Image (cartoon, rainbow, N blue to C red):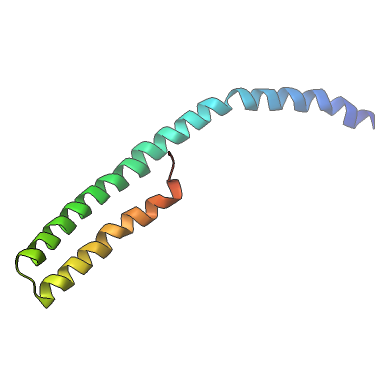
Length: 92
């Protein structure tokens, strides 16, 4: 029993030290998500949306079954990064 009671202050000190580094860890984690995950995904979405815009404009300018297939494929391609980003959705 005494050993368990004696270990409580040690655990409190260790936990206190871990908590003081938590904001730094969170900051680094959020920065890495921003630089390594969020921004590249939005850039990919931007590129795919531009390709979708071109495919839809081409289809509207000269409707054809090939143009429709290309527009559908561009829609599917643009939708993929959007769906992956839904996991990280934030804001209003």
